[in-house]
Image 1 (cartoon, rainbow, N blue to C red):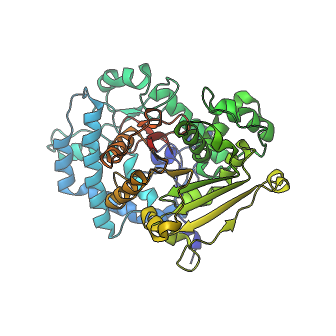
Image 2: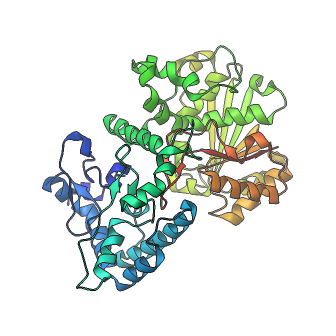
Image 3: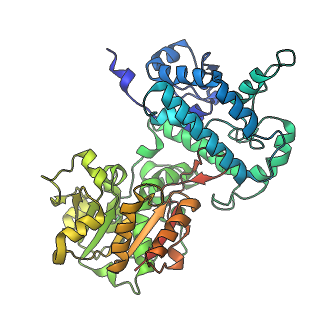
Length: 480
């Protein structure tokens, strides 16, 4: 049996929108010819060899997509859910698309007989759609097939923005109606006043950067080994200011070419930088920068905090007077990565750089596979409040809501300095409301607000024609 058939790789965004081979990920700009899968027409390949190699992973979703498209109920849903004229409010259109996508996902899962894998879901979530009406190539094929046989014409296909190639339209009139929103106005959930088109172009560059590096962008784990001579405020500074020269020096690139490197590095460094930003803004003075031991509790911890734990050393490197950095990571999902009742709570000394070793500075981790409030109350009077409790991208308004409410109530009741991050504005505002309902008095600079130290590696919002999200992109709220 070919073991490669069972290896799940996550195709880049360009492969999900049919602009790169779904197997080898080579893009259209590499002078290759891409051909659609003849059955599902949802993915493209650069040749028969790649299609054959990928078939073991693709065949089930391919068949399910074909069945779903031919289902009469899919045709009815497509005809009545989307207007012919371009919409004036893209947020309303996004809501319609979200409903359509959820219906598709349920139908596909029913046809396959199991939950969809991440790559399979991504094909639906990022299916190219007209910014004016929300139609996809698949929907236009369904509509064409549903017309009277005498009037049926060849289905239209989507065109893409000539500049970013990552925004789509079904007709020139629809493009004229939305082009100013795409390229003429700053994206409200982007950054630096850039338009959706400009940010899309950055995403395209970042995808290429990840492929050149030989991995997904989320595997670029980096933090500088330099140690600051003294702690300094993070106010009035930026990712470029703090990391540009370090990256340029280590990888021997011009600072002017460091953009993709900084964005890729920011995904995981955003955890350390958010912790430092929260400590600076939730404390009355800078005494915390001179403590012998700094204790951070991470709530809802899982793979991202475990796999990228080495980036936490950046906190030590920015606080030269701190000798010990202690992390307590709590989350029921830690059970899935080997934390059990036998090894929970074991203090683990983490690897540090040579400078920290020589200076006797250390980073300690403890792991508890349970909810934070359960962990804390189980200790009783032995529980010691941390310098900061942080929940990265908790999703507390969407998943395990009841459990998160108990944790937030515990934090508020015990006056534990805390901060929660979110992927986007919507999540941040919903989570802020949960904190307020628990009695938290949110510090305005800590949310709900865009996180100045959130990742700058943006991702297009799934199931929508507008919007971006990022790891720790928003601060949902900070309180003490």
